[in-house]
Length: 351
View 1: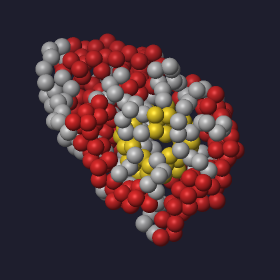
View 2: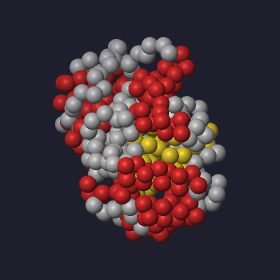
View 3: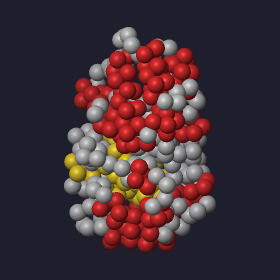
View 4: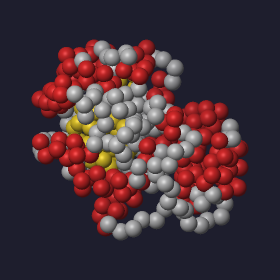
């Protein structure tokens, strides 16, 4: 599997998730088998004008490669300049977000709105590709349509054909429409038909991938070249290694042990604190901890304690209370509702 010149050992990647997938989440996953990661959507005007959190937004280090910087905006010249900024900061791939269904993005002619503004979408594709050296891979993230109308389907394929004609290295397709947001099933047969139509192009699939089994099943059912794991990666940095093992051997997988969970939780908070400082890390890590807690045999009680975290001290108290003694973890219900689902569904890539 490769994206442009970038060769990847396994066909799985960590999606960009607003409010989650900072460098801390990416590095914890990379150390557990994630071969490729994408940033959360980076707004063009924020990067151009140095808004709050700019340095944290584009923060990568030598361990955080290969990485795609996902950019979102509505003006071709601005997105072209942002692509150049990320290239200067050593990003390996530039991904255009034409997929985000969140209303505040849609109303500003960004993200999934591009499926209703074909001239603008084409202009952006050209501007970004022209702004970068030929060897830098560009990709675009789409949904299968704005809605289920024939007009929307035509726009999808025109954007797709334009991307291929401009030598975009890959296209990622979420198999829901923009109007669906995250409700209802993701239409995997659409991905299968798409890959059959473009067998020589690199297509990444997403939507309803919550577990390693889902990721491997998407590969088999649709034939896509790579699976984009979003919600299934929150609090589960092991999903990539699990999916790789399942793909290779087909053998049953074990959930992470209590001490494996503890080590990831300790590591994740530590990196988050380096990036954001202790106070902000405490706030950000609460929702991460809730997700990690799913693998603990006493998940509901552990979640309650993670919700109360405010600092490194209170985080460590949770680890001391629940993760001191090793033992087997448990497989959670991957689609069960929990305390962060509402927040996730406001993200641009909670797929």
